[in-house]
Length: 147
Image (cartoon, rainbow, N blue to C red; front, side):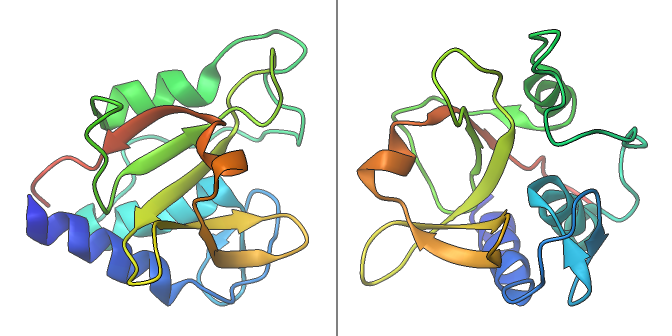
């Protein structure tokens, strides 16, 4: 399990500098947070487990459905919140009362906890997992074993 976690972080770091492009998933050309996760999945497991439907920037907000969380539960393994580890997929709720719709991949750093994510206006970056980010985490998952 340790090796696949490290591989997830190594692959996510290869995407750093990729511009933010809504709905895209092409390293170096463009991606959003889901596109980054999809790219890491492809590197670890090959073909994506399901086709991603078109979505808008406010997806799921009008209906209040936790679509991203439901998809994570279909394909990733839930983690106990207090057992954080590098390579975890982090699911964020950006505003209180709204649906969870941002993803990142936890990464270790000698300077402290970080995570890799695609962020509008910034592209793929490695950010400090500061308290403002940490309090937005609503779930942690891990990639399944095997390819």
